[in-house]
Length: 234
Ligand SMILES: Nc1ncnc2c1ncn2[C@@H]1O[C@H](COP(=O)(O)OP(=O)(O)OP(=O)(O)O)[C@@H](O)[C@H]1O
Ligand SMILES: [Mg+2]
Image (cartoon, rainbow, N blue to C red; front, side, top):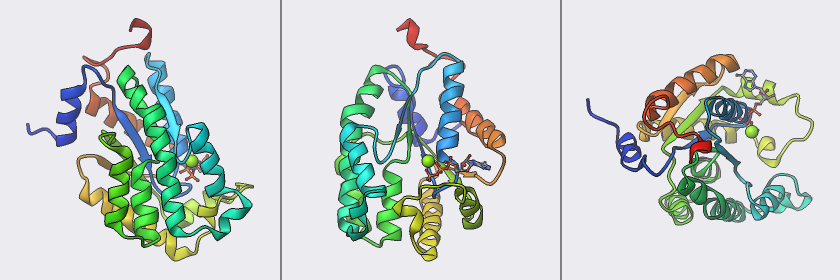
């Protein structure tokens, strides 16, 4: 059987590295819920995954997160400044946290990563997609996810899930056509990266989605067999 390129790459480095898994999708699609479910599942079988979020995950990144999402001044932010702030936060996260964790042999799960920038700043804000890709690789280097779950829900579902939130961030207050561009761009991303990006129907029950994600992780990374290395034995 022919192996996917990402799988081959993973197998080549699996002796020293655990997977780097990212979750993507529009606001309210269930990323954080599923990140937590996957982390809990891994912990139950003896792993201690490192879980990060974007923007954020480091002291500088969390300050940038506040500026991007909730600071009073952020309404005057240009799309270009927004792009560079996301990349600045990511640079800190990659160098301070993700690379060291992967080198230690930890699983890494990230709630959004560079695909969000391609989609939100490239497609939805309509900044030059080639510049966005260059900045993504400038910042992430070879820190490319082994697997990305794209949780897909329609706008009405996302809106009803988010309606209970008291504090809304700036990205939750965009015009409707912005979210349409986001969803279309995510679909396009999945079509162009069939080996890395797995499209998941996020409109189903939390448990059902978590079960599908776990099945894919187990299959892709042979969790129950040769790579199982609980932290306590290292
Ligand atoms: N499959 C699901 N079915 C119903 N409700 C869900 C489901 N998944 C998550 N939720 C609920 O929807 C809300 C948004 O979920 P969550 O915070 O996980 O989304 P998110 O993608 O992380 O959002 P954001 O992009 O804003 O961080 C939460 O109240 C959560 O409990
Ligand atoms: Mg979230």
